[in-house]
Length: 360
Image (cartoon, rainbow, N blue to C red):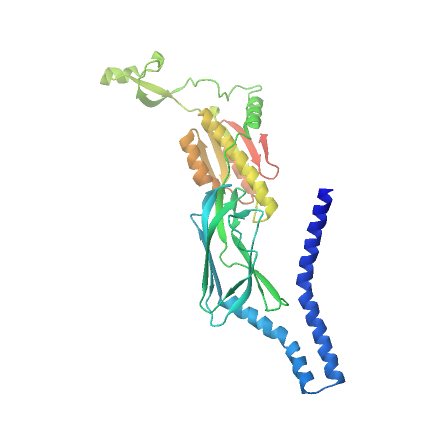
């Protein structure tokens, strides 16, 4: 019963809004027709003055809105354009009348799906006297990860009676890069992929110690195997050093990222949010296991980045991640596959279109 009343109340509000939008125009048309009939039937100076006053109101109102567009200056900024999902940052906006006449009927719009303001300031219209500025300081929260426009996106201007309305976008929108939350959402799938990769071949095992010793050295510590001691270095320097395991190409996973062109469409932003959270979860998994995963991704060409510990994970998370975007054509996808063949490794493709990990 409550839901039915709630839906009914919502519909009534929509109808009321439509009524407010169309009523001034209906009244204007009625007045225009009425004064035209009055001039035709009675004539006289008063009738003509009234008729031309109504007739010329529309072009005068339109000219006033054009003037408002010229005089109105809006600036918005925040503390850095890199932020975390669902974390607030200080935001400020300045609305300025740079002209010599008062302006009014200014309304600001933003996407309440992606952006949340701590203090709502867009419900009413603004009026400014000549050379007057309004400063608003609040906090802004972005609800989805990715690169997109946040804050105020569009402006609506109207005349004194709300007959003519013009809506347009800001010339300099506020672009932000929002980092996803680090979760374990991909652990189950990446574990399944690794199990599948081990069927019939034993080239990728996170639970085995590497047996290939490289040329990198560190000081001997109690508990190190005697087989890892660099005896020639000990004979030469008298200092016990152990050789560190060499990273083998066969002991690495290559993750090929097939991205899509998101733009600022809400559904695409939501899809990118899920994709980035999943990708970060995969990277965090390998950083936690301290085993390498090579990311192959598009960024003005084809780039690679290897994550093997939390230091490299942080670099990927804070710097590389926001560059991974844009649609990939067939030639680029083929080139990325060829790039993955440069080393003997388990190859996994991660498609943004269906958010799916595929062993190839």
